Image (cartoon, rainbow, N blue to C red; front, side, top):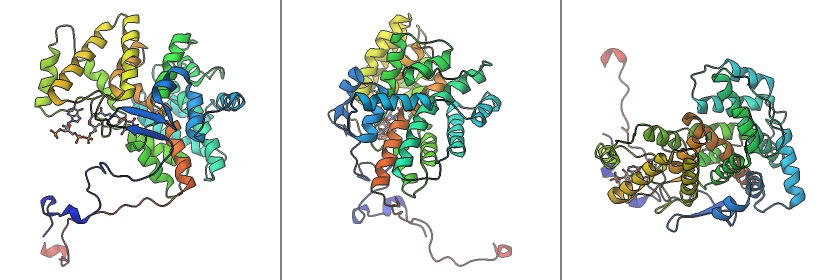
Length: 385
Ligand code: SDX
């Protein structure tokens, strides 16, 4: 006789199994999310001022060290990140030989794991070695993404120029030409706004792997697997696929209402923590408007705003980080199935920052489970079943 969900008196347990909703599982100094006010701070600095004034490399330093760098420290980190952008031969060969139709997030997951085999410190879980590996991972993920995209399109994989920012070299390796200032800055802001976000599913995965004292490559590989899911990072690709179903004659209100009636989730909307506009969505909304009009795709932004209006009226749900980022990436000419990999090359800074924090005060993460199944059954030989 098993226990049904309804029969459980949850009041006698500290928590309920609703996706750990509202549960405080960790303490952290990496970021603060105020879900009611729609505010986000990285180690004390609000996302708006970081997006306006900082760089992704400076945000990496901030997340890893919980303070902003001085000029010399930032220069040293930039130099280290530039020097580590090359990929090992074995990874380049994988990118050239892997099935061209593979999902980019699956290729990123595999190639990231392969980096461990080539990293001389892969088994060293000290915080000093882990920070060095965090820098190498942050430097190399962009090259994996760009390399696979070029290879699957029959183009030569380009080596990084090892100059300027991660955003600059990524766009160069992806498109084969040095990006203009505008494109580099747009990519840099995208990386900043996607860098860190508290205890989201992929960061939770990362910390859970770290907590067994496993290595940082395993933790980041696991986090990539988690972010791949459409309820998490995979939403931005799904948003673009939804926008591509529309055309100038589509009745957008009916289109969205139809999905809602069929109990379909509208990708890019809703959030476990934000109960108002995601502050990153606010920033990306402006970018989407500007970029879409620059490339004569204003219709994408207009359609997006119509969807925002319907979702607010019908479900009182606001857009999250993934909604407008889709239009920004598309306006930059980036393939929709690459969007979540770009999310990953930003969030690797947050994942590794949390890995280092978990290391500093580690305890194995092992929650309880409430057993609902049968009990005390007698084993029956197979001939009698
Ligand atoms: C990211 O956690 C993070 O910080 C993540 C992230 C980060 O930076 O790491 O912010 C990045 O993952 C953003 C989220 C990207 N995912 C999506 O856009 C997928 C669509 N969103 C939903 O699946 C949903 O909103 C979640 C998963 C994001 C949050 O869901 P919850 O907190 O588990 O809430 P729920 O699914 O239980 O929904 C509560 C109600 C339900 O209605 P009822 O069944 O109670 O009537 O709200 C409805 C849901 O149906 N709802 C939606 C909806 N999101 C919630 N209905 C339609 N479309 C949606 N998108």
